[in-house]
Image 1 (spheres, one colour):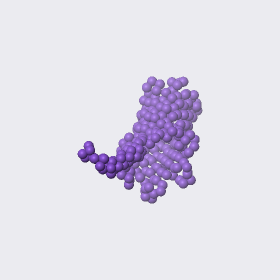
Image 2 (image 1 turned 180 degrees about the horizontal axis):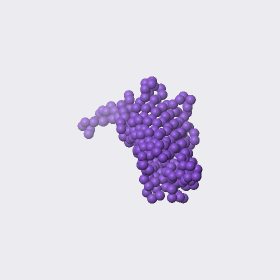
Image 3 (image 1 turned 30 degrees about the vertical axis):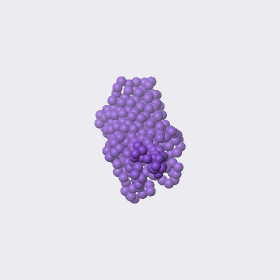
Image 4 (image 1 turned 135 degrees about the vertical axis):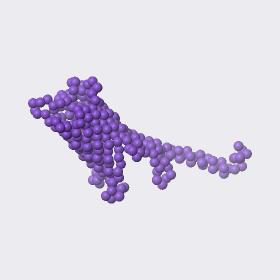
Length: 282
């Protein structure tokens, strides 16, 4: 080694080597910071969902309307709202199709007066299959979305919207606790998992896991409270102007979800309405 690196006779080489090692040690944490996943948000958020449902009638036509708000913390730091609805058609007793549309607004909770950061218009087509397994009612839901988003601060040119498509699949299960079916006075447990796919990448974009409990108070009104964990995945990308590469990242958030569903009953007052499963249209 001394033949090629005579450190005793070339102190400059020794100093250069020490400098390179020191720079590498300092750069390593910065490089890890560029590629490490974002830490999870330690505080819980909250969602409030208010839904009006018109079930399918004798000819199968129905629909729903929904208002939804979300906050970064429990009942404070509100930053997001949805206004949406759709028209449904019951093809059979366990198969329903739906055409929906909605408006989705995201703002900075620290400055709501500044208006939205992103405003999305959405159109979707949905196919829902229900499947009884003993007392448990399963639901398979497939949704294809078309999304147009405008951003503040001219991220997208004025009067133009960025388009992205998306596909979603949700598997839900509801278990009535004190009665064999969902009817007035029935308490129940509900769970679901939903996956989101983006055809342009990242192909696996989001996952939602949900677990909660609720009660159908009367013929019309159902309430639920639940835990929901949402995980968003961001694609790997190059950081402009730095030469750094940011690896694929993952960000998770736990939320408290409170849901109120008012269902318009078509049956006459002296008739017993058909049992239904209180899945969320969201």
